[in-house]
Figure 1 (cartoon, rainbow, N blue to C red):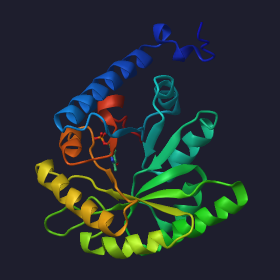
Figure 2 (cartoon, rainbow, N blue to C red):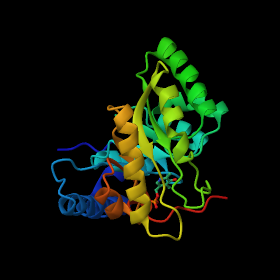
Figure 3 (cartoon, rainbow, N blue to C red):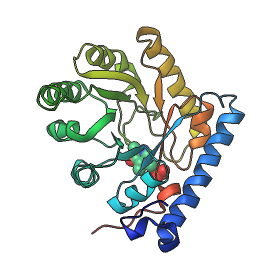
Figure 4 (cartoon, rainbow, N blue to C red):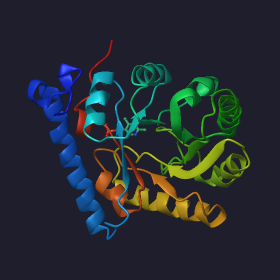
Amino acid sequence: MTEHPHGEQDPALDPRATELAQRLTAVRKRIAAAAESAGRSDRPPSLIVVTKFHPAADIRRLATLGVTDVGENRDQEAAAKSAELAGLALNWHFVGQLQSKKAKSVVRYAAAVHSVDRLQLVDALAKAVRNEMDAAGRAPLDCFIQVSLEDDGGTHRGGADPADVPLLAERMAGSIGLHLAGVMAVAPLGAPPEPAFEKLAAISARLVADHPGAAAISAGMSQDLEAAVKFGATHLRIGSDILGSRPVVG
Ligand SMILES: *Cc1c(COP(=O)(O)O)cnc(C)c1O
């Protein structure tokens, strides 16, 4: 018998758990199908469930369903949820725009930051993570360089200019406590995702030529995961197709 110390974790008593289980299964099937058509069933991408705006209770339900990696985009919310769920073996991924002054807080709970897009933030994270390694014995922080894929060179959805990737990568690779994992991007709004993810794959290939260990590609959200898998995504960040639309918070 499985114990359900919190009644809400028993699917029979908890419609939300049933709903999450069904949605998660549907997304896992989409990922498996996409990996199969990309000829990479042997190297499927890993799934990060983006839980922003949804309560810690939902993350608890997801952990029961086998989810190990969750993503958040606001430090205050992520810090509170990770503290509440400290007993669960979860990897926390920070995926949102990050102010340097929040680095100290983020390295207390995050295994990875996907949104590193400027030198000042590299330096702030490096300093914060070294302190946390000394004080609390934490592991190095996985860092993804977020690049902008917008054709006009704009950064409406965040990210560094692709031309700045080599400099950011050098700085990260030279920082004790930071592990350069690879690149991350969000597909531009209102444009087909495939050309954008194809561009990201090329940026990744150039990075890997200089940094063979930095082969991760964090790309693909609810609307475009198939395109991302086709172009080599290793980490998918899926929110609304698993959790439903985000509650409006006042
Ligand atoms: C919210 C968010 C996601 C998840 O998006 P969905 O469309 O809900 O799947 C992925 N990446 C980032 C950076 C996000 O902010």
